[in-house]
Image 1 (cartoon, rainbow, N blue to C red):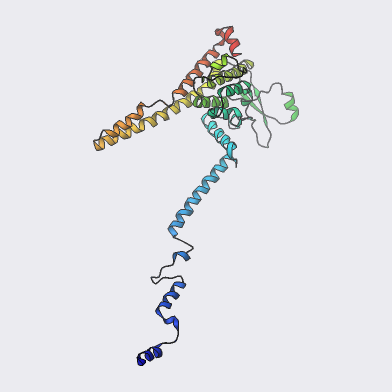
Image 2: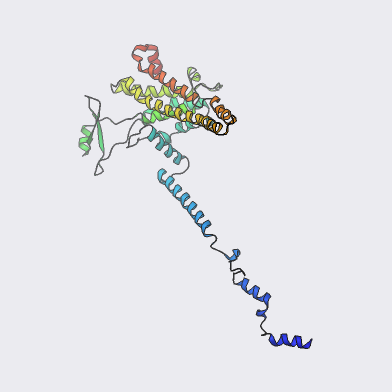
Length: 336
């Protein structure tokens, strides 16, 4: 017994770190396991692949936010949405490159028509009657090199807009009576197209407690009320400048019909895709159930029915207004 204990005592170096348990604790304290791996609690870098994926996703989100911020000029909220609507309308309705002096997308009426569920129809109709739509016609003046603005003069021969540089104030004052500012119906077309897509084709049965609106106007839908007011604006401008009513009304309504046709094609494609997919799956599997499910999408309600009805009604009002020379005095009083 004594020899055994003496042998252990003689063979020991007297350093407790040589004890196996202490060696394990020492190895763990260095951050390394017995298998040579790094402890996860002390690993600050993490998985390189996971970090690359996270950084990549963060970069993509950052670029997307920066791109949106650049498009809207740093605007947020309702202003950013108005700028976005302005960009879409400029593409769909071919706004002039110079832009408009008064953007319609920033108006209260545009918001009312875009979100009709937030406003009673009587309030929207009253706002339409009170709005001056002439302000949405005028296009910004062009700028030439040197920062000098240009003026616009109407040539009596062909009614084309002639551009002359505004070199000095005296020349501008002399030509002030002959100058005519450039106009475009693009914003009016965009507003009426929005109404066709957002507002129902018939007036809702509501009981109005006020008598601000005319009794006849209560039977008109929001789209019809807006169309009549816009047609009055266009015909008055055409008559004041000796322009043909039919041509001006056609220029106003044609972009609305083209946009409606494009939306019809997209809606039809969305309805046909489930049927085609179900037909393909049925051919491959021999099971008729996918075909029946896909065909059910074709029996659903037409999502473009209200918009098509609105646009058809707008065309009828436009044709009637354009033929005012033969319509009679009653129609003249109605539209003028």
